Length: 174
Image 1 (tube, rainbow, N blue to C red):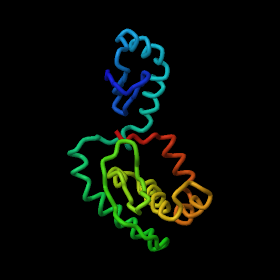
Image 2 (cartoon, rainbow, N blue to C red):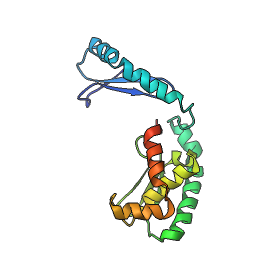
Image 3 (cartoon, rainbow, N blue to C red):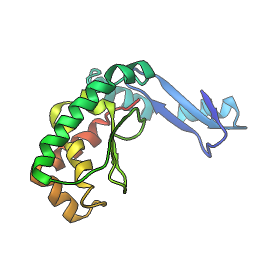
Image 4 (cartoon, rainbow, N blue to C red):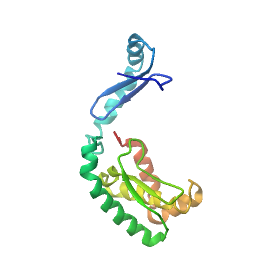
């Protein structure tokens, strides 16, 4: 159980290894937390059942050692894939950054910097390529308009299926 000064309500997180973490606002009693967990028992069991389907294929340890171990490999992989896709798009960008992010696979800044989670390089190729193409296309369309998705579909025509797969599998960045 964690206590957070910023938390406004109770929150439960279930990780692929079966760990359950309850985050509570300051001042909330442990009895209240226990009652909350009991109320959410069916949800907890359904999520644990959901994780069993994946048998750990897409889950990563989130620590500095793993990040440092894979960072340069990720930089090379992502750099090569950007070069490959940018031969088609020919977009201008500033820098490529490899990070250990907890909540994002990638992002694109207004300054033209492309940021990627090192874990992208550990994903199946079609998913990694989609994430890379997605961020690359933000260099031209800094939104998720029809024009943006038209750009993405030029090199990732199955992007809808991949997005659905990402959502349904809830690939865990933790």
